[in-house]
Amino acid sequence: MLSEMQVRQNLATSKFGRTIFEIHEQIDSTNTRTKILGTEGAPEGSIVLAEYQSAGRGRLGRAWHSPSGLNLYFSILLRPHIPIYQYPLITLAAALSLSEAIEKSTGLQPSIKWPNDLLINGKKLAGILTEMELLDPGSAYAILGIGLNVNLDRKHLPEALVESAGSLLIESGKAWPRERILAAVLNTLEKNYFTLNQGEFEEIRGRYLARCHTIGRMVTVTVGREPISGKAVDVDESGRLVIEKESDGERTAVNSGEVTLTGSSYMRRR
Ligand code: BTN
Image (tube, rainbow, N blue to C red; front, side, top):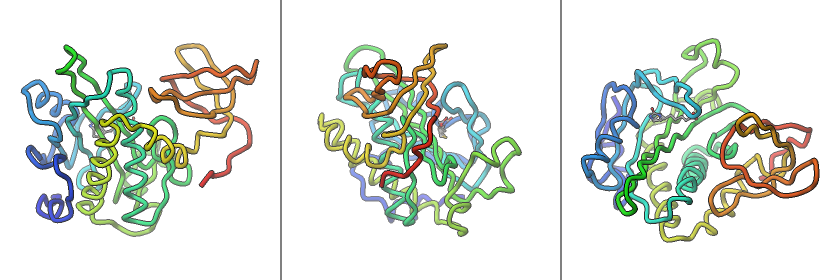
């Protein structure tokens, strides 16, 4: 079982994990539990973590594979001050924070697939699911759910995920102390979230773009049934991916859908 004491020893946050910090041996989904805390008025920075999720949720209605005792599955309750149209930036700031914290604590350099997948050597290391409760202005909140594969080995993966899923262990060949990784993520995340909440997205955007391997590449984004192809050139102030369309060179911004890389420019930008 993950040791709360060891997390606290490495924690340098002022809000995240400082009031409610639930650690469950098993739960349906940490996002679902955090949503309940949100409706009950729990303070910003409340955290729910589980060793195992029986119904871990991913983006686009997918499930999140959550085997016991190997990885990190947790959700943070946020009560942001930024306008609602900028809430997607929380997810971008979280992806950036994961990449920065992992690099700092392991030396590995995961890159970000817009908007929020963390990749290492083409394999998915972490996923982020942000769910929003928009309610009345002023009482809206967000649940930031993070799944990070730490000590997952290939043998723990179902056949369907063997090719696509990665972990810190698979990448480095050694096991990592989950408590230290978690504390590093929370420390970095709180800092970046505070910056974002003060309206300083520009400060975050540059660092995000530098780590985002989607930028500069040819992509096809399927939004609904409509595929858009072109070069990914930027991320705008509401977190949308800006694409220079192949068809007419016009720029368009997309805010959801699946990005598929096309073309051959597959060099790392960092
Ligand atoms: C994705 O599809 O990439 C997002 C995956 C998010 C998984 C995490 S694990 C902790 C939290 N609880 C959930 O049910 N989902 C998120």
